[in-house]
Image (tube, rainbow, N blue to C red; front, side, top):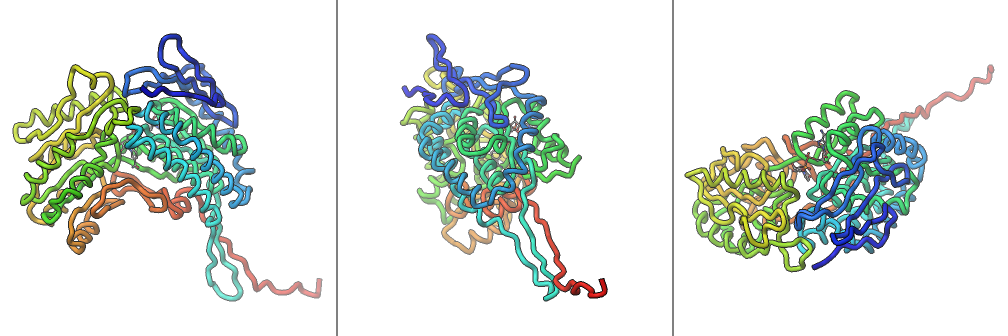
Length: 512
Ligand code: NAD
């Protein structure tokens, strides 16, 4: 069994508990200092794969947010005046240190999220380092433009930082999402207060520790706490000039309302119920692998981009599903830190119960067919953590709760179609519009569907994760704004200022 180690106690010493697992005790990073909550209260962090205590972090509230925002506001004038290339150099240095410590980061991610180390957490840790290096390299691209208004005019624009960014992230890919907010925000010259998710704050605090080794105090601040107590005051704070949020659509709406009061710009990366459309010519093994990947079964489908509605052409419906079931049931579920494990655990008991509720709902529908999975076992090794079974229901209606709501768990619904138009209509019949997956060897047909589907991100004949450099975000209730790219950094983390200069000022009059 792998155990966690905390060799560098800079963020706060880890305290071993006699007889039990080591408990990592961490503080918040505010103005370059590691601080407990003003109230002194803490939140317990659990390893959901073992249902064991893992650590504790401060239960930050409004007073703590006020301190963090004040520290970020104080640091802003100095940081914004650092030459962009010098900021970039610091980001690259952070990226290199993150790369050197990526195994430590990956183990922390696996321990607190339940995401399997081999299939998920290592990739996430790599992405964290890559994000800092990528945005560091882009610092020189924070350029404005000149506008040809005539010989007597110089018209140019500047990309200026916005000020203090308030960022809020969820637990499902906590380190990656934090890196994808911190790196572009500070690269562009902003300072940031980031609220980590209450279920998975430890990897984010490790990133903060590494950032702090390289940056002036107050440029990066990380607070921990619950959404209402800590996230809400951050989103509402008058000195927060931009809010970047990743999380559920319901909370995203509340964030947007709070920001509207002071006309603060928001980026919202929200939920999804993404369709996979499989054409009859794609009844092949590589497509099965792609569906398993796009459904994110190996991260318990706790992914906003999970292709959780599978629209299969009626000609291949049964044969495709039969083989998909055997692929899916071959995946090994178990302790996230075990190298053999493909699928780890659900994040917490509340989410586990919610997923089971959806499965029960499917089981209670006389018309739907359970093909694999179902409710988790009530005895045996899988009861040690919050382990859910990859579950597939066939013959589901697109109108059902299972096909309309974001489950954020490994429940896939398969729906047959006959006409392309009908498949696209069903795919678009959702208030979400984050990702979509199209599967066909006929590239014309596939691109027709890719263009017709309402989603911010479409993949054709593949089901992988997002890539740095590609603007990413949703349409409809899946969010607004794009991040992850140069354009995303410019649009989300800078303001454009236009400057017009009259070059035809007459010479000083000799009469004076
Ligand atoms: P959530 O919205 O409950 O919480 C996300 C974060 O917001 C947490 O840090 C939480 O503490 C905070 N929060 C909660 N209530 C708040 C409030 N009233 N004011 C301010 N902050 C508040 O979401 P979750 O359950 O942690 O994460 C799952 C959701 O995130 C899913 O809907 C998923 O689709 C979405 N998500 C989207 C993307 C994307 O890129 N579009 C990526 C990952 C996750």
